[in-house]
Image (cartoon, rainbow, N blue to C red; front, side, top):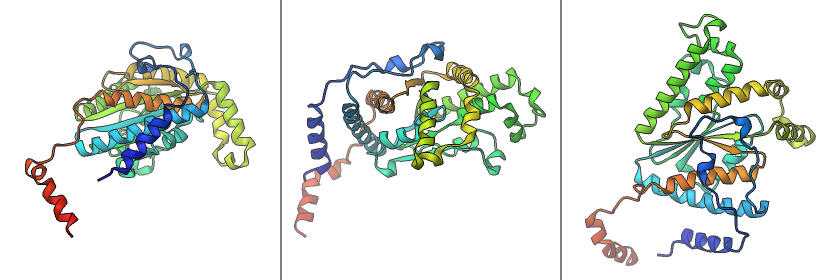
Length: 313
């Protein structure tokens, strides 16, 4: 039987050979493997091709990623957790839309974590993230993540009081020891799920303050984007330097081999989308044990018989 999907992919990849060659990328250059200063990392990256071709390259990579996910679904031994963090307007929502649009909907679940609900505050801060983890064979995307609990709460420590922690009675109790313990808990959480078959990707979309200003202005200038703007965005923007300090500390403390951080230049949305897809594709392609299961010998031996049976109906 002719596989239409494979034929379509063949012609699509063949057509992509006609686009301009792209700069060769080593994904390790975005991986945080030593103490890093965010101010030393660029918010832009030149792929040495035009925007139209970047979109074509992304289409190629996301289709390959979708094929990998199909195989992982059949393999049923690994899950993939994709964590996206970044300042407001960093492009998280549109990145999710563009990078994962080729996926079979049964193979991916996206969770956008907002302010904790009353029920969520009735549990420990990791609970709502733990119950949202992807099943084996599936991708889970966290749009904002458990790291909000060492980012926004660190910028606004009074938020911690809403968690009703027995040892925290006032903001003064939210000290360095408190944050040390919370980072240890997050590292233990990620080590536990990694040891049990979850492949973890953590992406910080590294946006410049100038580009954020331009994107906020765009939301105000285009009527169809007005709904995205909140005056609170400007209040949080005033705390930019504090947020950068907290992001830098969180990334340095929690980038581990089993759960690495990748800092992705995000001033150009198409480039950021491609780089995220490229990191995932190259990493997952290196897993030699992710394969479709072998057919039972009896079924394999009788495939011709089953074909004949169906054909003769």
